[in-house]
Length: 103
Image 1: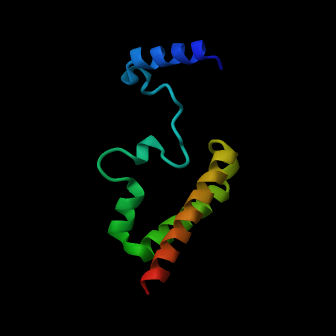
Image 2 (image 1 turned 90 degrees about the vertical axis):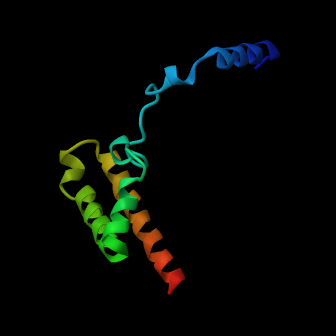
């Protein structure tokens, strides 16, 4: 990239209103689905707060089963569903490790 190209990009970003770009990037439906991030608290954090750790672990395990069961190939994108299952497994690991550290 030449210095002239860089100057053009700098003037572009200086002139563009970032609000105009809002919604142009595809949402991350695995790690931050917009319908789970509305308001002050993310849904999973609310679930952990209400159900406490044991209930939240059960909730996550249920979602792993959901996303790796028949839904994997019958609803939505199988790759996205597999990634969602991994997300919930990672959340389970996070909760288990947190409990192990506090014990």
